[in-house]
Length: 134
Image 1: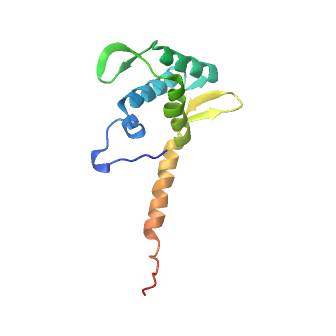
Image 2 (image 1 turned 90 degrees about the vertical axis):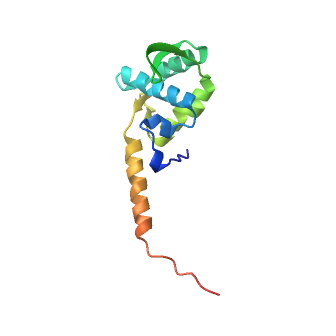
Image 3 (image 1 turned 45 degrees about the vertical axis):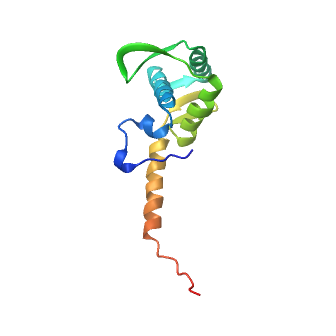
């Protein structure tokens, strides 16, 4: 996944950095809240239940823009897996344990961001390439 951001206009909400659309941001945030509400880990069945409730439009949550009021969210199940869960897994925000068949919030995203920063420092400190002039 490609993540582009403007360091001068960095939003306060991490989900606005991770996702391209407002709807994806809301659903991504709802997913992480759902996982947190279930002890930081959900089974494959619970994840499917979450995706199905979203698909049917029966998932109720509070969103940042409308505080104090619960709203029903609707999001296509296939798009949920393609645009929300898979990117969160590939970035390291969510881990999937193949043996326990559970999804869990992870710190790998932070570790990868640190690694990317170190890669940049390494590149910055390299000696410049000598180009041949013709």
